[in-house]
Image (cartoon, each protein chain N blue to C red):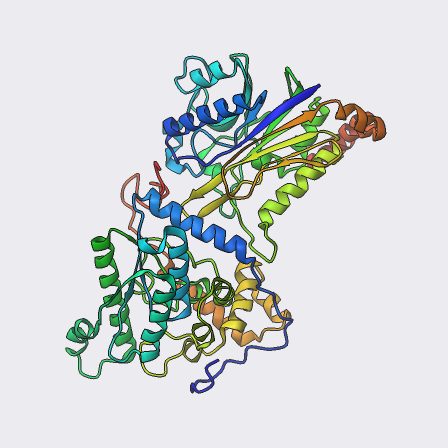
Length: 290
Length: 286
Protein backbone atom coordinates (compact mmCIF):
# COMPACT_ATOMS: atom_id res chain seq x y z
CA UNK A 1 0.00 0.00 0.00
CA UNK A 2 1.02 3.62 -0.40
CA UNK A 3 3.17 3.82 2.71
CA UNK A 4 5.30 6.72 1.49
CA UNK A 5 2.49 8.91 0.25
CA UNK A 6 1.60 11.96 2.24
CA UNK A 7 -2.13 12.31 2.57
CA UNK A 8 -4.76 12.71 5.17
CA UNK A 9 -6.35 9.36 5.61
CA UNK A 10 -10.08 9.49 6.05
CA UNK A 11 -11.26 7.66 9.14
CA UNK A 12 -12.83 4.73 7.37
CA UNK A 13 -14.21 3.15 10.51
CA UNK A 14 -12.44 -0.16 10.77
CA UNK A 15 -14.99 -1.65 13.12
CA UNK A 16 -16.88 -3.53 10.46
CA UNK A 17 -16.86 -7.19 9.65
CA UNK A 18 -14.74 -8.04 6.61
CA UNK A 19 -17.01 -8.23 3.57
CA UNK A 20 -16.00 -11.04 1.28
CA UNK A 21 -15.71 -9.91 -2.35
CA UNK A 22 -14.33 -13.19 -3.63
CA UNK A 23 -15.41 -14.02 -7.17
CA UNK A 24 -15.36 -17.30 -9.02
CA UNK A 25 -12.41 -16.96 -11.35
CA UNK A 26 -13.45 -19.47 -13.99
CA UNK A 27 -16.92 -17.96 -14.36
CA UNK A 28 -15.60 -14.40 -14.53
CA UNK A 29 -12.96 -15.38 -17.06
CA UNK A 30 -15.44 -17.26 -19.22
CA UNK A 31 -18.01 -14.44 -19.27
CA UNK A 32 -15.46 -11.70 -19.88
CA UNK A 33 -13.59 -13.43 -22.71
CA UNK A 34 -16.89 -14.47 -24.35
CA UNK A 35 -18.06 -10.88 -23.99
CA UNK A 36 -14.97 -9.48 -25.73
CA UNK A 37 -15.23 -12.00 -28.57
CA UNK A 38 -18.98 -11.56 -29.02
CA UNK A 39 -19.12 -7.79 -28.90
CA UNK A 40 -16.07 -7.23 -31.11
CA UNK A 41 -17.20 -9.71 -33.75
CA UNK A 42 -20.78 -8.41 -33.79
CA UNK A 43 -19.41 -4.94 -34.50
CA UNK A 44 -17.72 -6.46 -37.55
CA UNK A 45 -14.19 -6.72 -36.15
CA UNK A 46 -11.85 -9.47 -35.01
CA UNK A 47 -9.09 -7.43 -33.43
CA UNK A 48 -8.52 -5.25 -30.38
CA UNK A 49 -6.27 -2.38 -29.32
CA UNK A 50 -5.43 -1.80 -25.66
CA UNK A 51 -3.52 1.01 -23.95
CA UNK A 52 -1.13 -0.67 -21.52
CA UNK A 53 0.31 1.42 -18.70
CA UNK A 54 2.05 -1.46 -17.00
CA UNK A 55 -0.48 -1.37 -14.17
CA UNK A 56 -2.89 -4.03 -13.04
CA UNK A 57 -6.09 -2.97 -14.81
CA UNK A 58 -4.66 -2.48 -18.28
CA UNK A 59 -2.57 -5.65 -17.91
CA UNK A 60 -5.73 -7.63 -17.15
CA UNK A 61 -7.53 -6.15 -20.16
CA UNK A 62 -4.58 -7.25 -22.34
CA UNK A 63 -4.65 -10.78 -20.91
CA UNK A 64 -8.39 -11.10 -21.43
CA UNK A 65 -8.27 -9.65 -24.96
CA UNK A 66 -5.43 -11.98 -25.95
CA UNK A 67 -7.29 -14.97 -24.49
CA UNK A 68 -10.52 -13.98 -26.26
CA UNK A 69 -9.14 -13.09 -29.69
CA UNK A 70 -5.71 -14.71 -29.92
CA UNK A 71 -2.48 -12.80 -29.25
CA UNK A 72 -2.00 -12.09 -32.96
CA UNK A 73 -5.23 -10.10 -32.98
CA UNK A 74 -4.29 -7.78 -30.14
CA UNK A 75 -2.25 -4.61 -30.50
CA UNK A 76 -0.90 -3.25 -27.23
CA UNK A 77 0.12 0.41 -27.04
CA UNK A 78 2.72 1.77 -24.62
CA UNK A 79 2.40 5.53 -24.46
CA UNK A 80 4.91 6.93 -21.98
CA UNK A 81 5.21 10.58 -20.98
CA UNK A 82 8.56 11.94 -19.83
CA UNK A 83 7.51 11.71 -16.18
CA UNK A 84 6.27 8.10 -16.44
CA UNK A 85 8.25 5.85 -14.12
CA UNK A 86 10.67 3.54 -15.94
CA UNK A 87 9.09 0.65 -14.02
CA UNK A 88 5.85 1.17 -15.93
CA UNK A 89 7.57 0.51 -19.24
CA UNK A 90 9.38 -2.51 -17.83
CA UNK A 91 6.14 -3.98 -16.50
CA UNK A 92 4.34 -3.35 -19.77
CA UNK A 93 7.15 -5.17 -21.58
CA UNK A 94 6.73 -8.16 -19.27
CA UNK A 95 3.03 -8.37 -20.20
CA UNK A 96 3.72 -8.00 -23.93
CA UNK A 97 6.36 -10.72 -23.87
CA UNK A 98 4.28 -13.07 -21.73
CA UNK A 99 1.32 -12.79 -24.11
CA UNK A 100 3.16 -12.54 -27.43
CA UNK A 101 0.87 -9.75 -28.59
CA UNK A 102 1.85 -7.08 -31.11
CA UNK A 103 2.97 -3.83 -29.56
CA UNK A 104 3.87 -0.25 -30.37
CA UNK A 105 5.61 2.28 -28.16
CA UNK A 106 4.70 5.86 -28.96
CA UNK A 107 6.01 8.48 -26.52
CA UNK A 108 3.42 11.19 -25.95
CA UNK A 109 5.70 13.86 -24.44
CA UNK A 110 5.97 15.94 -27.59
CA UNK A 111 2.22 15.85 -28.26
CA UNK A 112 1.21 16.61 -24.68
CA UNK A 113 3.85 19.26 -24.14
CA UNK A 114 2.77 21.11 -27.28
CA UNK A 115 -0.35 22.03 -25.29
CA UNK A 116 1.01 21.99 -21.75
CA UNK A 117 3.86 24.39 -22.60
CA UNK A 118 1.40 27.05 -23.72
CA UNK A 119 0.34 27.58 -20.09
CA UNK A 120 3.11 28.48 -17.66
CA UNK A 121 2.84 26.52 -14.38
CA UNK A 122 -0.16 24.50 -15.52
CA UNK A 123 -1.47 22.56 -12.53
CA UNK A 124 -0.84 18.84 -12.53
CA UNK A 125 -4.48 17.81 -12.74
CA UNK A 126 -4.78 19.66 -16.05
CA UNK A 127 -1.52 18.14 -17.20
CA UNK A 128 -2.69 14.68 -16.19
CA UNK A 129 -5.97 15.11 -18.07
CA UNK A 130 -4.08 16.19 -21.19
CA UNK A 131 -1.87 13.10 -21.01
CA UNK A 132 -4.89 10.83 -20.59
CA UNK A 133 -6.63 12.47 -23.57
CA UNK A 134 -3.56 12.34 -25.79
CA UNK A 135 -3.38 8.62 -25.05
CA UNK A 136 -7.02 8.36 -26.11
CA UNK A 137 -6.21 10.06 -29.43
CA UNK A 138 -3.39 7.61 -30.10
CA UNK A 139 -5.59 4.67 -29.06
CA UNK A 140 -8.36 5.61 -31.49
CA UNK A 141 -5.91 6.38 -34.27
CA UNK A 142 -4.34 2.95 -33.87
CA UNK A 143 -7.81 1.43 -33.63
CA UNK A 144 -8.45 2.73 -37.13
CA UNK A 145 -5.00 1.75 -38.44
CA UNK A 146 -5.08 -1.78 -36.96
CA UNK A 147 -8.78 -2.34 -37.65
CA UNK A 148 -9.30 -3.25 -34.01
CA UNK A 149 -11.71 -2.00 -31.36
CA UNK A 150 -10.46 -0.17 -28.28
CA UNK A 151 -10.82 -2.35 -25.18
CA UNK A 152 -11.21 -0.34 -22.00
CA UNK A 153 -9.48 -0.79 -18.67
CA UNK A 154 -11.71 1.00 -16.15
CA UNK A 155 -12.87 -0.96 -13.10
CA UNK A 156 -16.09 -0.59 -11.11
CA UNK A 157 -14.42 1.23 -8.23
CA UNK A 158 -12.99 4.00 -10.40
CA UNK A 159 -16.17 4.26 -12.47
CA UNK A 160 -18.26 4.72 -9.33
CA UNK A 161 -15.82 7.14 -7.72
CA UNK A 162 -15.33 9.02 -10.99
CA UNK A 163 -11.58 8.51 -10.60
CA UNK A 164 -10.98 8.77 -14.32
CA UNK A 165 -10.48 11.37 -17.05
CA UNK A 166 -13.62 11.85 -19.11
CA UNK A 167 -12.83 11.09 -22.79
CA UNK A 168 -9.36 10.10 -21.64
CA UNK A 169 -8.68 6.75 -19.99
CA UNK A 170 -12.44 6.17 -19.80
CA UNK A 171 -12.78 6.12 -23.61
CA UNK A 172 -13.21 2.66 -25.15
CA UNK A 173 -15.49 0.68 -27.45
CA UNK A 174 -16.16 -2.01 -24.84
CA UNK A 175 -15.16 -2.44 -21.23
CA UNK A 176 -14.71 -5.94 -19.80
CA UNK A 177 -13.60 -4.75 -16.32
CA UNK A 178 -16.31 -2.25 -15.50
CA UNK A 179 -18.30 -4.53 -13.18
CA UNK A 180 -15.31 -5.73 -11.14
CA UNK A 181 -14.15 -3.85 -8.07
CA UNK A 182 -10.43 -3.14 -7.88
CA UNK A 183 -9.90 -5.92 -5.33
CA UNK A 184 -11.69 -8.32 -7.70
CA UNK A 185 -9.52 -7.17 -10.62
CA UNK A 186 -6.57 -8.16 -8.43
CA UNK A 187 -8.05 -11.64 -7.77
CA UNK A 188 -8.66 -12.26 -11.45
CA UNK A 189 -5.29 -10.76 -12.43
CA UNK A 190 -3.50 -13.05 -10.02
CA UNK A 191 -5.31 -16.14 -11.25
CA UNK A 192 -4.76 -15.31 -14.89
CA UNK A 193 -0.99 -15.04 -14.38
CA UNK A 194 -0.18 -11.33 -14.30
CA UNK A 195 3.41 -10.95 -13.02
CA UNK A 196 3.63 -10.62 -9.23
CA UNK A 197 5.49 -7.30 -9.39
CA UNK A 198 2.49 -5.73 -11.15
CA UNK A 199 0.07 -7.21 -8.63
CA UNK A 200 2.14 -5.96 -5.71
CA UNK A 201 2.84 -2.35 -6.67
CA UNK A 202 0.62 0.49 -5.42
CA UNK A 203 -2.05 1.39 -7.99
CA UNK A 204 -1.24 4.65 -9.75
CA UNK A 205 -2.36 6.72 -12.73
CA UNK A 206 1.38 7.54 -13.06
CA UNK A 207 0.59 11.08 -14.17
CA UNK A 208 3.19 12.65 -11.86
CA UNK A 209 6.02 11.41 -9.72
CA UNK A 210 4.93 9.64 -6.56
CA UNK A 211 1.20 9.75 -7.43
CA UNK A 212 -0.79 6.84 -6.04
CA UNK A 213 -4.54 6.23 -6.33
CA UNK A 214 -4.96 5.61 -2.64
CA UNK A 215 -2.89 8.69 -1.78
CA UNK A 216 -5.09 10.86 -3.94
CA UNK A 217 -8.37 9.31 -2.91
CA UNK A 218 -7.53 9.30 0.79
CA UNK A 219 -8.66 5.75 1.45
CA UNK A 220 -7.70 2.23 0.43
CA UNK A 221 -9.32 0.21 -2.33
CA UNK A 222 -9.78 -2.63 0.10
CA UNK A 223 -11.96 -0.47 2.34
CA UNK A 224 -13.86 1.50 -0.29
CA UNK A 225 -14.65 -1.65 -2.30
CA UNK A 226 -16.36 -3.17 0.71
CA UNK A 227 -18.35 -0.01 1.30
CA UNK A 228 -19.32 0.37 -2.37
CA UNK A 229 -20.38 -3.28 -2.48
CA UNK A 230 -22.80 -2.66 0.40
CA UNK A 231 -24.06 0.65 -0.99
CA UNK A 232 -24.37 -0.29 -4.64
CA UNK A 233 -24.68 -4.07 -4.94
CA UNK A 234 -26.50 -4.75 -1.68
CA UNK A 235 -28.50 -1.49 -1.65
CA UNK A 236 -27.57 -0.55 1.93
CA UNK A 237 -28.78 2.86 3.03
CA UNK A 238 -26.08 5.20 4.42
CA UNK A 239 -27.26 4.53 7.97
CA UNK A 240 -27.07 0.78 7.31
CA UNK A 241 -23.43 1.21 6.23
CA UNK A 242 -22.67 3.09 9.43
CA UNK A 243 -24.42 0.39 11.42
CA UNK A 244 -22.25 -2.16 9.59
CA UNK A 245 -19.21 -0.40 11.05
CA UNK A 246 -18.08 2.19 8.50
CA UNK A 247 -17.50 5.72 9.80
CA UNK A 248 -20.20 8.21 8.94
CA UNK A 249 -17.76 10.66 7.35
CA UNK A 250 -16.37 7.92 5.11
CA UNK A 251 -19.85 6.82 4.06
CA UNK A 252 -21.03 10.39 3.37
CA UNK A 253 -17.80 11.26 1.56
CA UNK A 254 -17.96 8.25 -0.74
CA UNK A 255 -21.67 8.70 -1.44
CA UNK A 256 -21.10 12.32 -2.37
CA UNK A 257 -18.22 11.36 -4.62
CA UNK A 258 -20.39 8.78 -6.40
CA UNK A 259 -23.19 11.31 -6.83
CA UNK A 260 -20.97 14.13 -8.02
CA UNK A 261 -19.41 11.98 -10.73
CA UNK A 262 -22.60 10.64 -12.29
CA UNK A 263 -21.95 12.89 -15.32
CA UNK A 264 -18.89 10.81 -16.21
CA UNK A 265 -21.05 7.69 -16.49
CA UNK A 266 -23.58 9.07 -18.96
CA UNK A 267 -23.67 10.38 -22.47
CA UNK A 268 -24.14 14.19 -22.48
CA UNK A 269 -27.86 14.96 -22.04
CA UNK A 270 -29.62 16.11 -25.18
CA UNK A 271 -32.17 18.91 -24.80
CA UNK A 272 -35.43 17.34 -25.94
CA UNK A 273 -37.41 19.27 -28.55
CA UNK A 274 -39.02 16.75 -30.90
CA UNK A 275 -41.28 13.75 -30.41
CA UNK A 276 -38.43 11.30 -30.72
CA UNK A 277 -35.02 11.98 -29.29
CA UNK A 278 -31.86 9.92 -29.09
CA UNK A 279 -31.41 8.61 -25.56
CA UNK A 280 -35.01 9.19 -24.40
CA UNK A 281 -37.36 7.50 -26.83
CA UNK A 282 -35.09 6.28 -29.60
CA UNK A 283 -33.94 3.14 -27.89
CA UNK A 284 -31.81 0.42 -29.44
CA UNK A 285 -28.90 -1.60 -28.14
CA UNK A 286 -25.49 -1.40 -29.80
CA UNK A 287 -26.06 -4.99 -30.92
CA UNK A 288 -29.11 -3.92 -32.96
CA UNK A 289 -29.52 -6.24 -35.94
CA UNK A 290 -26.62 -8.56 -35.12
CA UNK B 1 -45.35 -43.49 -22.02
CA UNK B 2 -41.94 -42.18 -22.96
CA UNK B 3 -41.31 -38.71 -24.38
CA UNK B 4 -38.06 -37.60 -25.96
CA UNK B 5 -37.48 -33.89 -25.38
CA UNK B 6 -34.81 -31.68 -26.95
CA UNK B 7 -33.69 -28.48 -25.26
CA UNK B 8 -32.54 -25.96 -27.87
CA UNK B 9 -30.29 -23.65 -25.89
CA UNK B 10 -29.52 -21.12 -28.60
CA UNK B 11 -27.99 -17.69 -29.00
CA UNK B 12 -30.06 -15.26 -31.09
CA UNK B 13 -29.51 -12.34 -33.45
CA UNK B 14 -31.08 -9.19 -32.01
CA UNK B 15 -33.94 -8.21 -34.26
CA UNK B 16 -32.94 -10.47 -37.17
CA UNK B 17 -35.87 -12.88 -37.46
CA UNK B 18 -34.64 -14.43 -40.72
CA UNK B 19 -31.30 -15.43 -39.19
CA UNK B 20 -33.03 -16.76 -36.08
CA UNK B 21 -35.53 -18.77 -38.12
CA UNK B 22 -32.65 -20.35 -40.00
CA UNK B 23 -31.10 -21.43 -36.72
CA UNK B 24 -34.45 -22.81 -35.53
CA UNK B 25 -34.71 -24.95 -38.65
CA UNK B 26 -31.15 -26.29 -38.19
CA UNK B 27 -31.83 -27.20 -34.56
CA UNK B 28 -35.18 -28.76 -35.43
CA UNK B 29 -33.59 -30.96 -38.10
CA UNK B 30 -30.84 -32.01 -35.69
CA UNK B 31 -33.38 -32.73 -32.98
CA UNK B 32 -35.45 -34.78 -35.40
CA UNK B 33 -32.36 -36.78 -36.32
CA UNK B 34 -31.88 -37.49 -32.60
CA UNK B 35 -35.42 -38.82 -32.32
CA UNK B 36 -36.85 -35.85 -30.41
CA UNK B 37 -40.65 -35.64 -30.26
CA UNK B 38 -40.71 -32.19 -28.66
CA UNK B 39 -38.16 -29.38 -29.00
CA UNK B 40 -38.26 -26.39 -26.67
CA UNK B 41 -36.71 -23.05 -27.67
CA UNK B 42 -36.08 -20.18 -25.22
CA UNK B 43 -38.03 -16.96 -24.67
CA UNK B 44 -38.13 -14.66 -27.73
CA UNK B 45 -36.07 -17.22 -29.64
CA UNK B 46 -37.13 -15.82 -33.01
CA UNK B 47 -36.32 -12.19 -32.19
CA UNK B 48 -33.74 -11.75 -29.42
CA UNK B 49 -34.50 -10.25 -26.04
CA UNK B 50 -33.62 -6.55 -25.48
CA UNK B 51 -35.72 -5.40 -28.40
CA UNK B 52 -36.75 -1.98 -27.13
CA UNK B 53 -37.86 0.03 -30.19
CA UNK B 54 -37.41 -3.02 -32.45
CA UNK B 55 -40.57 -4.61 -31.01
CA UNK B 56 -43.05 -3.50 -33.72
CA UNK B 57 -40.71 -4.50 -36.55
CA UNK B 58 -40.16 -8.10 -35.40
CA UNK B 59 -43.75 -9.02 -34.48
CA UNK B 60 -45.55 -12.03 -36.05
CA UNK B 61 -48.93 -13.66 -36.19
CA UNK B 62 -48.63 -17.35 -35.46
CA UNK B 63 -50.40 -18.82 -38.50
CA UNK B 64 -49.67 -20.67 -41.76
CA UNK B 65 -50.00 -17.36 -43.59
CA UNK B 66 -46.98 -16.02 -41.79
CA UNK B 67 -43.70 -16.61 -43.66
CA UNK B 68 -41.84 -17.24 -40.43
CA UNK B 69 -44.40 -19.63 -38.95
CA UNK B 70 -45.06 -21.55 -42.18
CA UNK B 71 -41.80 -23.56 -42.13
CA UNK B 72 -42.08 -24.06 -38.38
CA UNK B 73 -45.62 -25.38 -38.70
CA UNK B 74 -44.52 -27.70 -41.51
CA UNK B 75 -41.74 -29.04 -39.30
CA UNK B 76 -44.25 -29.51 -36.48
CA UNK B 77 -45.89 -32.26 -38.57
CA UNK B 78 -43.04 -34.39 -37.36
CA UNK B 79 -41.90 -32.79 -34.10
CA UNK B 80 -43.84 -30.73 -31.58
CA UNK B 81 -42.18 -27.50 -30.60
CA UNK B 82 -42.27 -24.44 -28.39
CA UNK B 83 -40.95 -21.26 -30.02
CA UNK B 84 -40.62 -17.75 -28.61
CA UNK B 85 -41.76 -14.69 -30.54
CA UNK B 86 -43.42 -11.28 -30.39
CA UNK B 87 -47.16 -11.68 -30.97
CA UNK B 88 -49.02 -8.72 -32.43
CA UNK B 89 -52.73 -9.11 -31.80
CA UNK B 90 -55.58 -7.90 -34.02
CA UNK B 91 -55.58 -4.57 -32.25
CA UNK B 92 -51.80 -4.18 -32.52
CA UNK B 93 -50.80 -4.87 -28.98
CA UNK B 94 -47.42 -6.58 -28.72
CA UNK B 95 -46.91 -9.53 -26.38
CA UNK B 96 -43.92 -11.60 -25.39
CA UNK B 97 -45.30 -14.95 -26.52
CA UNK B 98 -44.52 -18.64 -26.78
CA UNK B 99 -46.39 -20.92 -29.20
CA UNK B 100 -46.84 -24.68 -28.96
CA UNK B 101 -46.91 -26.10 -32.49
CA UNK B 102 -47.91 -29.67 -33.31
CA UNK B 103 -49.20 -31.53 -36.37
CA UNK B 104 -49.06 -28.35 -38.45
CA UNK B 105 -51.35 -26.53 -36.00
CA UNK B 106 -50.87 -23.77 -33.45
CA UNK B 107 -52.10 -25.67 -30.40
CA UNK B 108 -51.58 -22.95 -27.81
CA UNK B 109 -50.15 -19.45 -27.42
CA UNK B 110 -49.10 -18.10 -24.05
CA UNK B 111 -48.66 -14.38 -23.53
CA UNK B 112 -46.19 -13.50 -20.78
CA UNK B 113 -48.31 -12.34 -17.87
CA UNK B 114 -45.59 -10.93 -15.64
CA UNK B 115 -43.40 -8.34 -17.35
CA UNK B 116 -40.40 -7.46 -15.18
CA UNK B 117 -39.99 -3.69 -15.16
CA UNK B 118 -37.37 -3.13 -12.51
CA UNK B 119 -33.61 -3.33 -12.19
CA UNK B 120 -32.15 -4.13 -15.58
CA UNK B 121 -35.58 -5.05 -17.00
CA UNK B 122 -37.87 -2.75 -18.94
CA UNK B 123 -40.45 -5.11 -20.47
CA UNK B 124 -43.54 -3.24 -19.25
CA UNK B 125 -42.43 -0.25 -21.27
CA UNK B 126 -42.51 -2.11 -24.57
CA UNK B 127 -45.03 -4.96 -24.19
CA UNK B 128 -48.64 -5.60 -23.28
CA UNK B 129 -49.37 -7.80 -20.25
CA UNK B 130 -50.78 -11.25 -20.94
CA UNK B 131 -53.97 -11.99 -19.07
CA UNK B 132 -54.38 -15.76 -19.04
CA UNK B 133 -52.68 -18.78 -17.55
CA UNK B 134 -54.08 -21.90 -19.21
CA UNK B 135 -53.02 -25.52 -19.45
CA UNK B 136 -53.59 -27.25 -22.80
CA UNK B 137 -53.68 -30.78 -24.18
CA UNK B 138 -50.84 -32.23 -26.21
CA UNK B 139 -50.29 -35.68 -27.64
CA UNK B 140 -48.07 -36.34 -24.59
CA UNK B 141 -50.58 -35.23 -21.97
CA UNK B 142 -51.63 -31.91 -20.53
CA UNK B 143 -49.01 -29.18 -20.48
CA UNK B 144 -48.55 -25.53 -19.60
CA UNK B 145 -46.21 -22.80 -20.82
CA UNK B 146 -44.77 -19.97 -18.73
CA UNK B 147 -42.19 -17.39 -19.72
CA UNK B 148 -39.41 -16.38 -17.33
CA UNK B 149 -40.85 -13.86 -14.81
CA UNK B 150 -44.14 -15.79 -14.95
CA UNK B 151 -42.54 -18.55 -12.91
CA UNK B 152 -40.65 -16.22 -10.57
CA UNK B 153 -44.17 -15.82 -9.17
CA UNK B 154 -45.64 -18.86 -7.48
CA UNK B 155 -49.23 -18.41 -8.64
CA UNK B 156 -48.91 -19.12 -12.41
CA UNK B 157 -47.31 -22.56 -11.93
CA UNK B 158 -49.91 -23.31 -9.28
CA UNK B 159 -52.72 -22.34 -11.64
CA UNK B 160 -51.30 -24.55 -14.39
CA UNK B 161 -51.08 -27.45 -11.96
CA UNK B 162 -54.67 -27.06 -10.85
CA UNK B 163 -55.67 -26.70 -14.52
CA UNK B 164 -54.24 -30.15 -15.17
CA UNK B 165 -50.70 -29.62 -16.41
CA UNK B 166 -48.29 -32.46 -15.70
CA UNK B 167 -45.65 -31.12 -18.06
CA UNK B 168 -44.43 -27.57 -17.32
CA UNK B 169 -42.68 -25.94 -20.26
CA UNK B 170 -40.74 -22.90 -19.06
CA UNK B 171 -38.77 -20.60 -21.34
CA UNK B 172 -36.36 -17.79 -20.47
CA UNK B 173 -33.95 -15.21 -21.74
CA UNK B 174 -32.41 -14.82 -18.31
CA UNK B 175 -29.55 -12.33 -17.96
CA UNK B 176 -26.77 -13.65 -15.73
CA UNK B 177 -26.09 -11.64 -12.57
CA UNK B 178 -24.71 -12.07 -9.09
CA UNK B 179 -21.12 -13.29 -9.44
CA UNK B 180 -19.77 -14.61 -6.15
CA UNK B 181 -17.59 -17.48 -5.04
CA UNK B 182 -19.66 -20.21 -6.63
CA UNK B 183 -19.33 -21.23 -10.27
CA UNK B 184 -23.04 -20.65 -10.92
CA UNK B 185 -24.30 -17.07 -10.94
CA UNK B 186 -26.94 -16.16 -8.33
CA UNK B 187 -29.60 -15.82 -11.03
CA UNK B 188 -28.83 -19.35 -12.27
CA UNK B 189 -28.97 -20.86 -8.79
CA UNK B 190 -32.25 -19.11 -8.06
CA UNK B 191 -33.94 -20.44 -11.18
CA UNK B 192 -32.60 -23.96 -10.62
CA UNK B 193 -33.83 -23.92 -7.03
CA UNK B 194 -37.36 -22.87 -7.92
CA UNK B 195 -37.64 -25.25 -10.87
CA UNK B 196 -36.58 -28.13 -8.68
CA UNK B 197 -39.07 -26.93 -6.08
CA UNK B 198 -41.94 -26.75 -8.61
CA UNK B 199 -41.17 -30.25 -9.84
CA UNK B 200 -41.22 -31.51 -6.25
CA UNK B 201 -44.21 -29.49 -5.00
CA UNK B 202 -46.33 -30.26 -8.04
CA UNK B 203 -44.95 -33.78 -8.56
CA UNK B 204 -44.62 -32.88 -12.25
CA UNK B 205 -42.05 -32.58 -15.02
CA UNK B 206 -40.47 -29.14 -15.25
CA UNK B 207 -38.67 -28.37 -18.50
CA UNK B 208 -36.74 -25.11 -18.69
CA UNK B 209 -35.12 -23.74 -21.88
CA UNK B 210 -32.89 -20.71 -21.38
CA UNK B 211 -30.84 -18.90 -23.99
CA UNK B 212 -27.14 -18.05 -24.16
CA UNK B 213 -25.02 -15.31 -25.74
CA UNK B 214 -24.74 -11.59 -25.17
CA UNK B 215 -26.74 -8.49 -25.90
CA UNK B 216 -24.40 -5.56 -25.31
CA UNK B 217 -23.05 -6.26 -21.82
CA UNK B 218 -25.77 -8.70 -20.75
CA UNK B 219 -24.84 -12.38 -20.71
CA UNK B 220 -27.49 -15.09 -20.88
CA UNK B 221 -26.44 -18.08 -18.84
CA UNK B 222 -28.14 -21.10 -20.43
CA UNK B 223 -28.07 -24.04 -18.02
CA UNK B 224 -31.40 -25.38 -19.33
CA UNK B 225 -32.80 -28.25 -17.29
CA UNK B 226 -35.41 -30.97 -16.97
CA UNK B 227 -36.55 -32.07 -13.49
CA UNK B 228 -38.75 -35.11 -12.91
CA UNK B 229 -41.73 -35.39 -10.50
CA UNK B 230 -39.37 -36.44 -7.70
CA UNK B 231 -37.41 -33.22 -8.15
CA UNK B 232 -34.51 -35.17 -9.64
CA UNK B 233 -32.43 -33.63 -12.40
CA UNK B 234 -32.91 -35.47 -15.69
CA UNK B 235 -30.90 -33.22 -17.99
CA UNK B 236 -28.80 -30.11 -17.72
CA UNK B 237 -27.25 -28.09 -20.54
CA UNK B 238 -23.91 -26.32 -20.00
CA UNK B 239 -23.72 -22.73 -18.80
CA UNK B 240 -22.99 -20.06 -21.42
CA UNK B 241 -22.67 -22.38 -24.44
CA UNK B 242 -25.11 -23.17 -27.20
CA UNK B 243 -26.39 -26.73 -26.87
CA UNK B 244 -28.96 -29.13 -28.20
CA UNK B 245 -29.42 -31.87 -25.64
CA UNK B 246 -31.97 -34.63 -25.80
CA UNK B 247 -33.43 -36.70 -22.97
CA UNK B 248 -36.14 -39.29 -22.70
CA UNK B 249 -38.60 -38.78 -19.87
CA UNK B 250 -40.91 -41.49 -18.60
CA UNK B 251 -44.42 -40.09 -18.13
CA UNK B 252 -45.23 -43.15 -16.00
CA UNK B 253 -43.10 -41.55 -13.30
CA UNK B 254 -46.15 -39.38 -12.59
CA UNK B 255 -48.02 -42.52 -11.54
CA UNK B 256 -45.24 -43.76 -9.31
CA UNK B 257 -44.49 -40.42 -7.62
CA UNK B 258 -48.14 -39.57 -7.03
CA UNK B 259 -48.84 -43.04 -5.64
CA UNK B 260 -46.15 -42.36 -3.05
CA UNK B 261 -46.85 -38.67 -2.54
CA UNK B 262 -50.48 -37.67 -3.24
CA UNK B 263 -49.97 -33.91 -3.07
CA UNK B 264 -52.22 -33.34 -6.07
CA UNK B 265 -54.97 -35.60 -4.67
CA UNK B 266 -54.90 -33.74 -1.35
CA UNK B 267 -54.64 -30.23 -2.74
CA UNK B 268 -57.53 -28.25 -1.24
CA UNK B 269 -58.42 -25.91 -4.07
CA UNK B 270 -61.79 -24.99 -2.55
CA UNK B 271 -60.06 -23.94 0.66
CA UNK B 272 -57.59 -21.85 -1.36
CA UNK B 273 -60.45 -20.25 -3.27
CA UNK B 274 -62.41 -19.50 -0.11
CA UNK B 275 -59.44 -17.92 1.60
CA UNK B 276 -58.49 -15.92 -1.48
CA UNK B 277 -62.06 -14.65 -1.67
CA UNK B 278 -61.90 -13.66 1.98
CA UNK B 279 -58.48 -12.01 1.68
CA UNK B 280 -59.22 -10.13 -1.51
CA UNK B 281 -62.73 -9.29 -0.32
CA UNK B 282 -61.28 -7.83 2.88
CA UNK B 283 -58.84 -5.72 0.91
CA UNK B 284 -61.63 -4.35 -1.22
CA UNK B 285 -63.52 -3.14 1.85
CA UNK B 286 -60.54 -1.12 3.13
